[in-house]
Image (cartoon, rainbow, N blue to C red):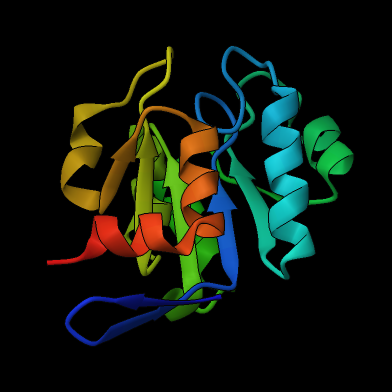
Length: 153
Protein backbone atom coordinates (compact mmCIF):
# COMPACT_ATOMS: atom_id res chain seq x y z
CA UNK A 1 0.00 0.00 0.00
CA UNK A 2 1.18 3.49 -0.77
CA UNK A 3 1.03 6.22 1.86
CA UNK A 4 1.40 9.90 0.96
CA UNK A 5 3.19 11.74 3.72
CA UNK A 6 2.64 15.51 3.69
CA UNK A 7 5.47 17.51 2.08
CA UNK A 8 5.68 15.10 -0.86
CA UNK A 9 7.17 11.97 0.71
CA UNK A 10 5.76 8.63 -0.44
CA UNK A 11 6.01 5.43 1.57
CA UNK A 12 5.16 2.03 0.09
CA UNK A 13 4.75 -0.90 2.47
CA UNK A 14 4.08 -4.45 1.27
CA UNK A 15 5.62 -6.49 4.11
CA UNK A 16 5.08 -6.17 7.85
CA UNK A 17 7.51 -8.05 10.08
CA UNK A 18 6.28 -8.72 13.59
CA UNK A 19 7.95 -9.85 16.76
CA UNK A 20 5.86 -12.39 18.63
CA UNK A 21 6.28 -12.20 22.40
CA UNK A 22 5.32 -8.88 23.93
CA UNK A 23 4.28 -7.61 20.50
CA UNK A 24 1.85 -9.84 18.59
CA UNK A 25 1.01 -11.68 21.80
CA UNK A 26 1.10 -10.56 25.41
CA UNK A 27 2.18 -13.28 27.84
CA UNK A 28 1.60 -15.79 25.04
CA UNK A 29 -2.02 -14.78 24.42
CA UNK A 30 -3.19 -13.82 20.93
CA UNK A 31 -6.32 -11.66 21.04
CA UNK A 32 -9.24 -12.24 18.63
CA UNK A 33 -9.16 -8.58 17.60
CA UNK A 34 -5.53 -9.00 16.54
CA UNK A 35 -6.40 -12.10 14.49
CA UNK A 36 -9.09 -10.12 12.66
CA UNK A 37 -6.70 -7.24 11.90
CA UNK A 38 -4.06 -9.69 10.60
CA UNK A 39 -6.66 -11.24 8.27
CA UNK A 40 -7.76 -7.80 7.09
CA UNK A 41 -4.18 -6.82 6.25
CA UNK A 42 -3.57 -10.12 4.46
CA UNK A 43 -6.75 -9.56 2.44
CA UNK A 44 -5.32 -6.16 1.48
CA UNK A 45 -2.22 -7.84 -0.02
CA UNK A 46 0.17 -7.22 2.86
CA UNK A 47 2.66 -9.98 3.57
CA UNK A 48 2.86 -10.50 7.33
CA UNK A 49 5.87 -12.33 8.74
CA UNK A 50 6.93 -13.41 12.23
CA UNK A 51 10.57 -13.19 13.28
CA UNK A 52 10.76 -14.46 16.81
CA UNK A 53 13.17 -15.61 19.47
CA UNK A 54 10.28 -17.94 20.44
CA UNK A 55 10.89 -17.61 24.17
CA UNK A 56 7.51 -19.23 24.96
CA UNK A 57 7.83 -22.04 22.38
CA UNK A 58 4.54 -21.25 20.62
CA UNK A 59 5.74 -19.40 17.50
CA UNK A 60 5.07 -22.19 15.00
CA UNK A 61 1.57 -22.80 16.34
CA UNK A 62 0.70 -19.10 16.10
CA UNK A 63 2.31 -18.65 12.68
CA UNK A 64 0.39 -21.64 11.32
CA UNK A 65 -2.88 -20.38 12.83
CA UNK A 66 -2.38 -16.98 11.15
CA UNK A 67 -1.00 -18.26 7.84
CA UNK A 68 2.25 -16.35 8.36
CA UNK A 69 5.82 -17.27 7.53
CA UNK A 70 7.99 -17.83 10.59
CA UNK A 71 11.70 -17.14 10.93
CA UNK A 72 13.61 -17.66 14.14
CA UNK A 73 16.18 -15.29 15.53
CA UNK A 74 17.34 -15.45 19.12
CA UNK A 75 19.48 -12.30 18.96
CA UNK A 76 19.17 -8.88 17.38
CA UNK A 77 21.89 -9.85 14.88
CA UNK A 78 20.02 -13.03 13.91
CA UNK A 79 16.84 -11.03 13.40
CA UNK A 80 18.78 -8.52 11.29
CA UNK A 81 20.10 -11.38 9.13
CA UNK A 82 16.55 -12.67 8.58
CA UNK A 83 15.47 -9.19 7.48
CA UNK A 84 17.91 -9.27 4.55
CA UNK A 85 15.45 -11.32 2.49
CA UNK A 86 12.91 -8.48 2.46
CA UNK A 87 13.02 -5.20 0.55
CA UNK A 88 14.04 -2.75 3.28
CA UNK A 89 12.39 0.12 1.39
CA UNK A 90 8.98 -1.61 1.48
CA UNK A 91 9.11 -3.35 4.86
CA UNK A 92 7.77 -2.22 8.23
CA UNK A 93 8.79 -3.79 11.54
CA UNK A 94 6.80 -3.97 14.77
CA UNK A 95 8.39 -4.98 18.08
CA UNK A 96 8.96 -4.10 21.71
CA UNK A 97 12.29 -5.50 22.87
CA UNK A 98 16.00 -4.95 22.50
CA UNK A 99 16.16 -8.09 20.34
CA UNK A 100 13.98 -6.24 17.77
CA UNK A 101 16.60 -3.58 17.03
CA UNK A 102 17.84 -5.85 14.23
CA UNK A 103 14.45 -5.71 12.55
CA UNK A 104 13.99 -1.98 13.17
CA UNK A 105 17.34 -1.12 11.56
CA UNK A 106 16.40 -3.06 8.43
CA UNK A 107 12.94 -1.60 7.82
CA UNK A 108 11.78 1.65 6.29
CA UNK A 109 9.26 2.10 9.11
CA UNK A 110 9.54 0.83 12.68
CA UNK A 111 6.81 0.74 15.31
CA UNK A 112 7.11 -0.11 19.00
CA UNK A 113 4.16 -1.43 20.97
CA UNK A 114 3.95 -0.43 24.61
CA UNK A 115 1.91 -3.26 26.09
CA UNK A 116 1.98 -4.92 29.50
CA UNK A 117 5.30 -6.67 28.81
CA UNK A 118 6.84 -3.22 28.28
CA UNK A 119 9.47 -1.92 25.90
CA UNK A 120 13.21 -1.80 26.32
CA UNK A 121 14.55 1.76 26.40
CA UNK A 122 17.35 0.87 23.95
CA UNK A 123 14.81 0.70 21.12
CA UNK A 124 13.61 4.30 21.43
CA UNK A 125 16.21 5.67 18.99
CA UNK A 126 15.39 2.91 16.47
CA UNK A 127 11.63 3.39 16.10
CA UNK A 128 9.55 5.90 14.19
CA UNK A 129 6.27 5.43 16.08
CA UNK A 130 5.24 4.18 19.53
CA UNK A 131 1.68 2.94 20.05
CA UNK A 132 -0.15 1.47 23.05
CA UNK A 133 -0.96 -1.94 21.48
CA UNK A 134 -0.46 -4.29 18.58
CA UNK A 135 -3.99 -3.55 17.39
CA UNK A 136 -3.16 0.17 17.27
CA UNK A 137 -0.01 -0.61 15.26
CA UNK A 138 -1.87 -2.79 12.76
CA UNK A 139 -4.67 -0.25 12.37
CA UNK A 140 -2.12 2.35 11.25
CA UNK A 141 -1.64 0.35 8.04
CA UNK A 142 -5.38 0.06 7.47
CA UNK A 143 -6.28 3.71 8.20
CA UNK A 144 -3.96 5.49 5.78
CA UNK A 145 -4.72 8.94 7.17
CA UNK A 146 -3.63 7.94 10.69
CA UNK A 147 -0.26 6.69 9.48
CA UNK A 148 0.23 9.65 7.17
CA UNK A 149 -0.69 12.11 9.91
CA UNK A 150 1.62 10.50 12.46
CA UNK A 151 4.59 10.65 10.06
CA UNK A 152 4.12 14.18 8.81
CA UNK A 153 6.75 16.75 9.61
